Length: 225
Image 1 (spheres, rainbow, N blue to C red):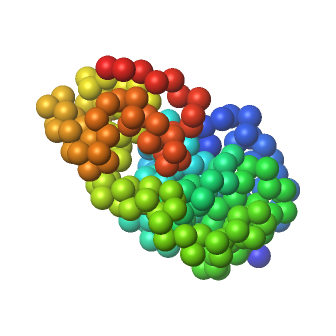
Image 2: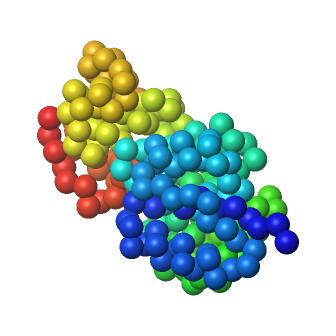
């Protein structure tokens, strides 16, 4: 029997180890790699070409939503299942719009996680039980916060999303430039465009937006630079 190869992308070591042990108990699933941030997840996905990536939505350096977009662009055959501790409508909508085939809560049982991997590997969408019960409501809310958040996210380029995350994590322009391999002046230009597109004009506001959109976790401290 050919096993379904899985890449785990989760920044909390104890959680990642738990998923690995859980998946190793299944005869048809094989963990081929582990990533502790979004950039590493993208690099490993390109190298290992797993069938499925189990992706935490909020990770350092590059969030799960943008990592998903970059992985699917580089390895179209790979399927992504997003993991989150939150079932906010905006998180679900943004995950779907990023190209993810599934959305699970970290509270879901092990058999739900395994079923999700098997289903998306076959090209089927999969949502955890709580999310599935509410899914039809999302389709009827054309003006809710999830739609507004998604539409604003859609206007940001991939690089702008990366800059937004690093700024919201409290990185100074110099640190952001070093992380992305670009000049400080370029960071400043991206920062101005992000603020203009989102109609947000201070760092605290960008951080609040990033939290509400699921780009970073709300444990990140607000830092004014």
